[in-house]
Amino acid sequence: MMCIGLSAAAFAEEGPRFSLSVSKTAPAVGEEVEVEIKASQVKDMVAFELNLYFNPGLWDTGAIQYSSDLAGFSSATQQNLWSEGHFQAVFTKLSRAAGENGNVTLGKVKFKAKANGLDTFTLRSLLVGQLGEPEDKFTEYTPNVQAQVVIRDGGPGGNNGNNGNNGNNGNNGNNGNNGNNGNNGNNGNNGNNGNNGNNGKGNDRTASGFTLQVTASPNKDGAVQVRVDPGQLKSVIDQAAGDHVTIAIQSDAGVKRVDVEIPMEQIRYANSKNVQTIAIDSGLATVYLNKDLFTRAGSSASVLQLTVSQVNASSLPAAASAIVGNHTVYDFDLKLDGRSVSPFNGKELTVEVPYTLQPGEGPSNIVIYYVSDGGRLEVVKNSRYDPATGKVSFKPKHFSMYFPAFANVAFNDLSESAWAKESIEALAARNAVNGVGNNSFSPNGHVTRAQFITMLVNLFDLADSTAKSSLSDVHEHAWYSTPIATAEKLGIVEGQDNGTFGVDDQITRQDMAVMMYRVARVLGIGLKPTEPTSRFNDQDAIASYASEAVTVMQQAGILNGMSEGVFAPQGFSTRAQAAVVLYRIYDKNY
Image (tube, rainbow, N blue to C red):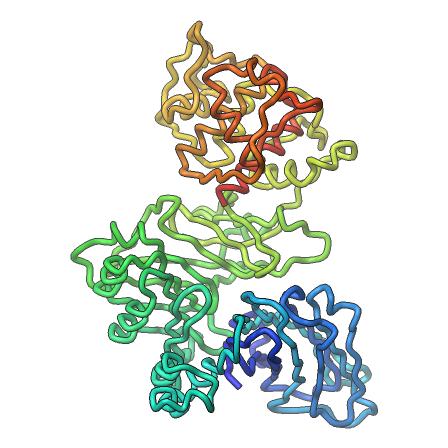
């Protein structure tokens, strides 16, 4: 079997470690893949519950088989969960016999592929029972270890993952023994790269790009230092041919700091080969360096240095520490030849950190907080949680300390606006909209032009304190002055014929469309058509300056028509309606 990876999830320092491996990384439809789940450093284990997640659309859930070599245990699996992509197995010792110790294979699960696609098996959580007096002790672990499989059409896809770890099999590919191994010559070449894999530096083709794996051991302080080999990275870049490259650091659980050095010569080489992103998976967090960053990274710099570390919340100022609680705080730093790189624009860099969703937490309310040097917390508005991966992604303006958390925002008057509840709470979690007091949102209240442009500018973090408005009714130092001045500076608004903005006027539906359309142009948001073009019964009533914007917003599914086939361009919006369309365009950008 090919071991795919060991997560750097938070375990007790002396607790067990978990790993996941698959028998094939590129099976064909109809073939079986065996997922093996192992634990090491087990002590007196008398029971466990494991939870493995997968995409049920890609596997025959009626053909799943589970086996284990553990003796003296009773076992049960929850077959009713399989169709939901959740495999759960529960094992319990039959008597008060001694528990298991050392290295243990918890089980093997066989899956039969039924459709093309990419799937990531994720061992999300385990509940482990240890022998104790007067009663056994149970501890929950969330390793989130993963193994990736690409299901393909045609004949056997070959065990190129296994061959990647076995240089001899790889050489057989070159020698033409591809029939025996189920591999073609190219996969055999991957076997040669597998010789490097024995040293933890093999090149492994994945569905989303090419990966250079580097294995490193931590020092006594729990820190890992990695210097990426320029020759090996160049080889991966050559194979990527304009795709995406990943540098994956594999180390022990419990690592608290990872330092990675990458030769800038290879970063510039990646740019010349049109590589779109270089992802650095430190085991703690993943940092995606975009092609835009390569361009400005400096022609004379020699080394790019990335540091990712976990910070003890108790070391933060008291106000921040109380809010952080048990959440993991990450400290990031990016340098060129020892000098920090900052700030970043929205396209240069993306970060992903793991987060385990807790009962009662809505995915849309999971955000990232920035911890300033003074301990003040600021929400990162572009942060998004992906339930499928269990990770929160965000695009920082600069590097510092960040942590993921659930923003517990709720209003007591949304029962009759349930259709807008998620949008309202998600925007409030990002400080893009506010309530009206007494824990109320007033979803049926109307929205003024000043209120809407303020929400729009705040949502995309566009506020420019240096901007000045030329419109006569925009009073300096008023709550709306900076958002309107910013929008005017960016060409999002132009004002009315009489030289005013219409601060207190209710915003019309066609003007909402225009403002969002212009924001999309400023930010480069791709508004691809997802809905068929509709000609509204009142199409001729839409102002000429708004016609294109209304069409684009309608086709993108952001701003739809009203009943009886009309758009109602002069109609007004409620606060709930405004929140929904704002969240839709936010969703398009991130």
